[in-house]
Length: 106
Image (cartoon, rainbow, N blue to C red):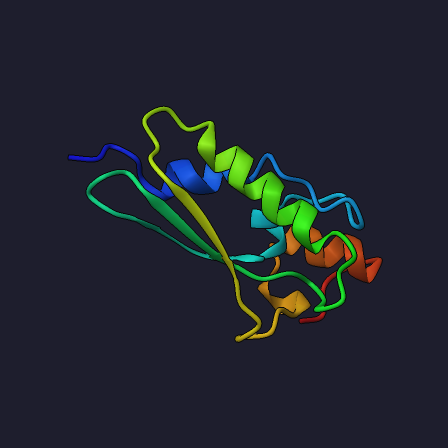
């Protein structure tokens, strides 16, 4: 039985900061799901804010390394998807407010 939870995975990923905006990937709404099997293997389904993100591979590596630090984790797979496309409405309120320069109007 695996004791790794989706919450633990999201907590680990929240240590990864998007260098362009200074918020973590969970706050940004870039993490769509974390699937944990009975052997504690983890698959993270995520996106990036833009397809042309110059740090695409770097961010993917950072997420993988963050999840691999979870005690007892097995293999870690990171899948980048483009559907649904990310938009600012997926971000936490504090991110929306900061990036819009004021009170969110979303």
